[in-house]
Length: 256
Ligand SMILES: [Fe+2]
Image 1: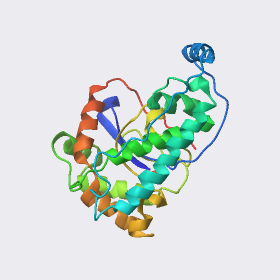
Image 2: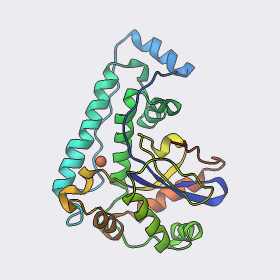
Image 3: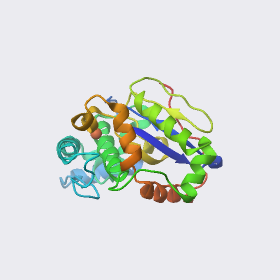
Image 4: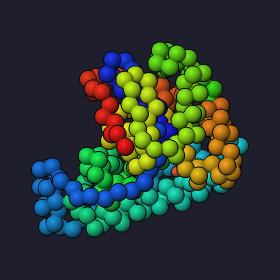
């Protein structure tokens, strides 16, 4: 996925580009979770996470993203991540009672992801991605968001170029971490959430997101996203929320 993130250390933003895969290591639970683990053994109750629906009908993004793509991407891929996560949670009552956000952060395990992390992060990222689009989206942001983009990227055109460049070079490796405007990449299942960054918009660059509509023309897919799909309304709301947080510090971006 390609993310545009905001963090509130002196009024700067950065782009975060991630490519998700899976790793596994052991988990060190905080004291609260150890207590939950012990108490939940007494009565075996599983926590399940549901498949959240996109905030529009599956044909609402036509002709830019087809109903067929949504049926496959949301109805099959996203569903598989949810089902896979729930199956894993049946076997791991240590993770009982976590919200999805908590699950993503906890199973990230300080950069040593547990088996559950990939599914949890993919569920989170897909929820976020659906909400990053809207029918009649695209064009340009306005007001505070536009001002912030112009401040951090020089111009909206430059922001768009950088975002496109990041999306199209997603399958590279390594992270770049610059103090102000950044494009970062990861080959692991890292979400902005686990880095204490606040994502503003995201674009899924997995093949299943665009192949049915655009075959291998990833550039056209990114253009269409920018011209017709991206929800600047949602981005504005997320930006306002992000700006309400203070003192988050510099983003903790791991070096690949
Ligand atoms: Fe996807």
